[in-house]
Image (cartoon, rainbow, N blue to C red; front, side, top):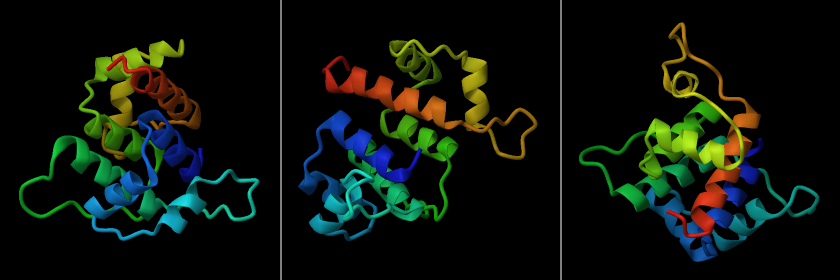
Length: 155
């Protein structure tokens, strides 16, 4: 999945306005313009679509965490320069205050079955022998399940 698709799905799920999107970036210390946000949200076929880099997606997700959970005491975590699906899933888990069983439940909303043991492998340290890479299929299904859970007011 590309970063633009991820941010579009999150925006749609929570019905964020442009102003809210800009605010979320700002909470993580990134100043972005309405034009930038608009270009990131455009479909890939649109010639004005701009690629959202990992650092900006990480900043957006950090802003989402701060917005939903509050700012951490002390120094704020560094914004990642490189992301993968495991990090994105972890950030969404934190932002939405989800437990493993909540994520399994969200995946079941789209008839995607995954056990808690399988899921926990995504949150392990990459050097751990049971670490597993979160594939696009899992991310796509999780984001779709999120849309079903959160856009219909089921939360």
